[in-house]
Image (cartoon, rainbow, N blue to C red; front, top):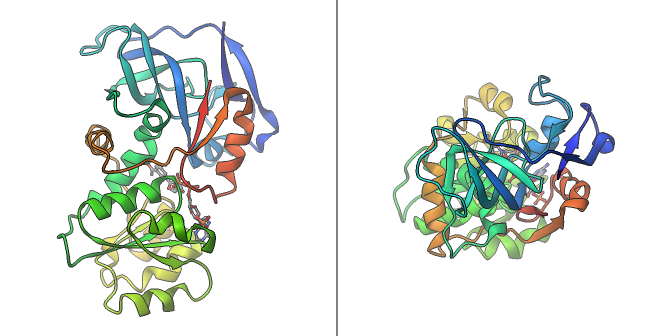
Length: 302
Ligand SMILES: NC(=O)c1ccc[n+]([C@@H]2O[C@H](COP(=O)([O-])OP(=O)(O)OC[C@H]3O[C@@H](n4cnc5c(N)ncnc54)[C@H](OP(=O)(O)O)[C@@H]3O)[C@@H](O)[C@H]2O)c1
């Protein structure tokens, strides 16, 4: 048997629990792995709350991304062998917060030696999202500005670093206690909260060439007017408000995971997988993300 963290009904964290299941066997197109680390994302609690559909089979394993060692290769999978160290998106209904799980082979890449399992586990969702959000509209190096809402979170810290790799000027918006963290990426820090629009106007009177929203709601509304062309606001957090404002919702690409894995491998971007919990503390890991104010990435290690 093998442990997996699940929720058994839509709602709060009270139905989350660690349970035993048989070690999952890969179906066609899947890889079985022994999990070494799993990334925790806002999607985990949003799914549990029923915000992302209500057709999940119960008990529903939690965790969308994982890194580990291949133990079995499913049919129709090429390019992977038992013993490979990999990172990838978890197969439907499996959960990354587990001792063993299944990955979608088409959304899995070999983990470079230079990347730790904890960092690797944050690549399939958070880092790949940061890559897509910063590449949807190509900017020119040097004279461009990237306004990043939620710059101190899991996606934001990576997006800020990608912006700096491209030599964009990055304006990172976050709460006061994240100033140092945001500035460590090379971004110019601006404090979130009341008066944000004025502070941004003062820092960049002509407005940003690209805004990336990782917060949504009122925070997105507050800065919408600052971006001269609203189709240059990309929101990963709030498709409804983005549509209402004439902004653009993030779309994910297949190539992002391999591309950002290379960037991280060469040490150009640090995923900040700094907050680690054991599998039997997965409730605390999810709670840390559910506050909406985690600094960097939260990872669960079996
Ligand atoms: N579409 C996709 O494929 C995709 C993939 C990954 C993530 N996402 C979404 O992208 C968003 C960010 O993900 P993440 O993993 O980076 O989340 P995260 O690590 O929880 O970071 C969110 C950041 O938002 C900031 N924040 C929270 N409330 C705020 C407010 N009222 N005003 C200003 N800032 C606020 C927090 O910063 P402070 O503590 O400084 O306030 C926090 O650092 C989430 O909504 C997530 O669901 C989408």
